[in-house]
Amino acid sequence: MKKLLAAILVFSGIFMCVGTADAQVRKGSTMVISGQGWYGYDIEQLHPNQTTFGYMTYDLGLGFQTGPESGNPYAQQFGFPIISIGMSVARMSHFQFSDQTRFPDLYSLYGSFERSLLRTRYLSLGYVFDFGGTSNPGKYDPVQNPGNNWLSAPFMAYFGVGAVAKLHIGKRWEIGADFMFRHYSNGRLALPNEAINALGGGIFARYRLSDYEYEKYKGKPQKSTDFKKGMQYMITLGGAVHTCQAEWNVFAYEDHLSDNPVSKNPTKEEAASLKAHPKFSLSFDALYRYSLRYATGLGVDMFYSSNMKELEAADRILYGDAAVDASPGYSPISIGLAVVQEVYWKNFAVHVAIGAYPYRHKGVNDKELNKKLDDRERGWHYEKAGVRYYFPKLGDTYVGFAIKSHSIKAEYLEFSIGIRL
Image (tube, rainbow, N blue to C red; front, side, top):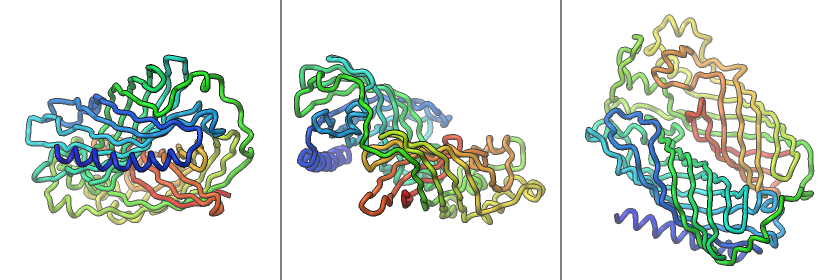
């Protein structure tokens, strides 16, 4: 309880500072304060000893909604969304297990983007995106808490997406409900990392610091002329650390060469010996910006992995010498081709890429055995999703943060710098 109260006080202070600054610099915006109770259900159910799968999350948020009088073309194009900073406490300590497994509560700080697609005087329907970071106070321990194999790093990424319906009560209050998918993952900063995927719904109440007037917001968005159509080219350098699934599987399974490897808990010494390896990427993107909000194009990605010797050694244990010798080999360089999409709000952008590898040699690619070992790193396609902030006064340089994954299972969390030409 003391941790919960401390977290609420700290984040409330952050909200107040952000809100005060925002109110001073933004014209034509309405500050909004919200609170929510959300019930989630663990849809993975990966733990045989888990007996309950539901948990509550409590959210607080502080943000703003920019109105038509602000003259903000992005707000007008997006239907005047609500952009806020939120904090949440996910009460996963309430999960119950038939053994001694214990889970902690998770504390998250995130940005939220809520847009109404249908708005009337009394009702709004739309969608919401959340993206941020999570503090995990209860890590995996192979001796004291071996069942907690979801969470093995003190920092995790949080992502949420869902549908929202809300009623306008008077001129300042709103009550609503949402149905969301929520995901927590450490991005392979450490293993194990089964991650947490949940579906659920919540009820929230929201208060505006100024009156809601439906007449100001009705009407379809008008096309904006505040941008130039044309090609734009990006060069991006990224860096990350990554814990290899194959190296972990050497410790996490017995009878590696059999058709049905048996899972086991690594010893504390084995878990501690697992290293996080640096990874780097260099990307070249060519996008056509055809509207204020969107740009679409193609990209070429070059990835460098520093753990090929370790991967080969692990494969010889997992698959045997004959399979390794017959494999395409172990190249630290991989090349990918991707379809790229960016969505803009002023200098802020959401960046998404879906790609395939025309060149990638990562040793043995036994699909059936990889599936049994839950190793998705050797597939032929990948995904990247993240955020960027552009600095026009610095020659359109930018910094970014993204998650790279294979079949929606994270490979690493990447920080990047780049320039837009």
